[in-house]
Length: 264
Ligand code: CUA
Image (cartoon, rainbow, N blue to C red):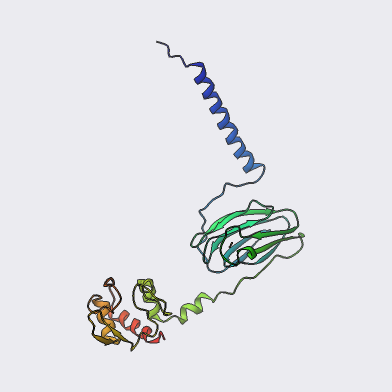
């Protein structure tokens, strides 16, 4: 028996094929002729806490843009005409926008996320950058500038806050602090007095605390050791018995205690 495809169905199939072909053709045209690359949200740049401007030579630049209330780091970059610039964007605080005038660059700056776009700058001039996501009182003044200079002008960037060198920072960090960071203690205990799930460590050494059963204690070495080994034994009043038992070596305990004494 012969299966007949109805005429209408044939038409529908033809139209579907033609529109798909046109669609794919336009994507290929955009990629090859117009140089518009398919946007990606996967980058190999880790979230960063300070802006950066990296010259890769041959008019290739990499910019790490840190959006924050209410400005961008860097606040101004200048590149020679003909440059290709890779923009990596993240936020230090809330969601921001990042739109470079007269380019295809239009991104969201999201904390802990790095978004990416590339732009090629052929025409000298000023390309204002604005934040197009409402982000608080200073939103309307949140902007930056990309300047495209003549080909022989040097590239430069402004407004990047110098980050403390990681090696110096690591050397100055007490071992106890590092251990507590690794074990996640600071998720519940602040060191600046701000409230958390557990008592703050600010000024904790020698502090008088009232326990949930009403007895008073002083935070000293035996109390801290007991609280880490058996978190539920003596819970400070006003806090839940929610601290997990986190394995610690004796040396780690010693380091932590030394560090806790210094949190004033
Ligand atoms: Cu940042 Cu609006």
